[in-house]
Length: 203
Length: 203
Picture 1 (cartoon, each protein chain N blue to C red):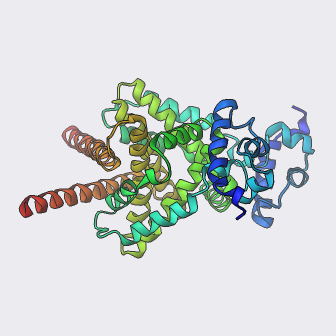
Picture 2 (picture 1 turned 135 degrees about the horizontal axis):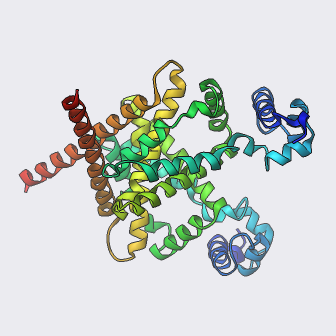
């Protein structure tokens, strides 16, 4: 890599985020991003296929790392927990400061084409987790459900963790969401029992 | 509507599905669909913004109907169940035969750009359900979680129901997935307790 290109990728990512925030995602072009980062447009396209990818650049590496975590999880007898623990135990701040992750999240949530890309990536990741659980002997009916609900529990904790902005850790945030889910599911089971016993009484 | 255009929308939908299956979604054009349905390309675009929309044409009407169901649900003390019951109680076969719904599902799952659109529509629907639950007094921390997990439970049941192709009803399929979820969550709670008591013993 020529010396003047060192750090280009990071400069491009920072420039892109600044421009997206200043003038909106739709109105920002690759040419503008390259200009702000003081590199050529050709350099932009050497790193990113399109401006969406600036926000998802490390996604494949990340997904592989997370899938490896689930493959190596000590115990899959509690498959939902295996998934949420692997996700929440990952060092997300190795990808950027909590503030920059928060800004990325806000940008994605408010831009339909980015949200679409985020959702399909999450969906594919959950499918991969499901396959891993299956390979590790989890019941086929359970594997996919645990994987997808697990990813959702994690995402809910992750958003909370970013919003909090204090020193809550992500593992505790995920445990809070898990116990919330346990409460909701228990409420449903008890409501079903009440209905069943009401039906018995009235028959 | 001129007499010769009666049934155009249905003919276009049928022609599109045939062509997508015969030659793939990517290789099918609006012009080909219109030709097969014996209408002009202009007529195609009167009904659909693009070829993706052929598969999502009734989506807004459907979403409004489903949100109305949640608004009117008798009881939101069990919010997850309210969501899955509203979804699974809906008469999906009013939108097409089970076989045509199954073919639509296969087409969406195997075509990335359709899957993206499906996922964002599901996500938006879950967000709306969450807002309704919130308005009905459900705890803010619980509303979104119940809505998103509820949509996921329903989708899992819906896919099973389409695959079964026999006379299982969708409500029972959703109840099966709900009790599966209850089992998974209980496994997690018990695993957490075991770990906690092991930690106590070793301290």
